[in-house]
Image (cartoon, rainbow, N blue to C red; front, side, top):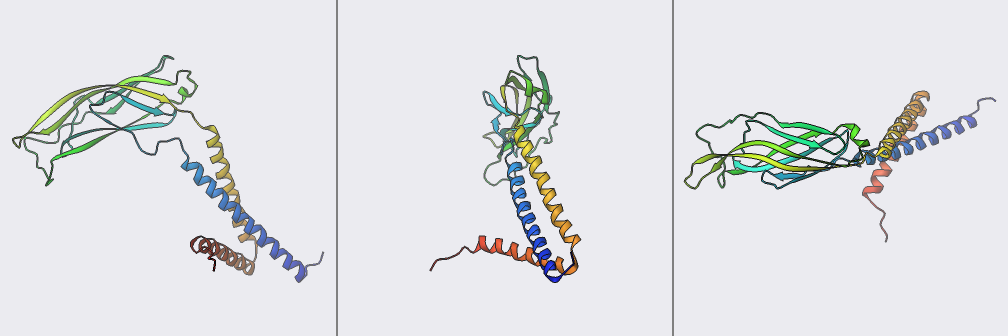
Length: 241
């Protein structure tokens, strides 16, 4: 078939249509990809437990990192540990593991502590605990782990006469951890969204590379108009008289 201006017009319209459809698909996959990654099983904020808590209850996913904060108060948020802190977990199916949460931490204050606060020298401190559960626990019939958080803490505490004294305490807090479910469907959705995003992006790039300079400018102009329409429509909604 001979190449005529009429056929050329059809080709330009077809390329523009494919380009716009690819962009729409790309935006759709990007939205799905962002949603899938935001819908993870990780807790948005780490749970906090006081050093004087009677128990600690956690939720963890096999193969994933679990975390929590241990909190207390001392002068200038100072603390130390001679033996460190350890988390021991076990279940009735034979699992038994001990995690080193905090290692030896020396006292970094001497006989005098300078308080920089104008109101209260006693400030909260936070000890971040992170550990990873083995992935084979996903097959365990026992969905609850038990154990304890043990170790020692030394903290400088204020006294009524304006001095301070070191307070030493031994921790032995019961811990329970409930195993969460690995969402295989979520991982599959992430893979599909990522694959679709790459294919759509590749299609758009291939169209821009394959066409001529004039057609490329038209496609990019159309892209600019399309993006501008999206932003202006979202920012300036239609008004009724």
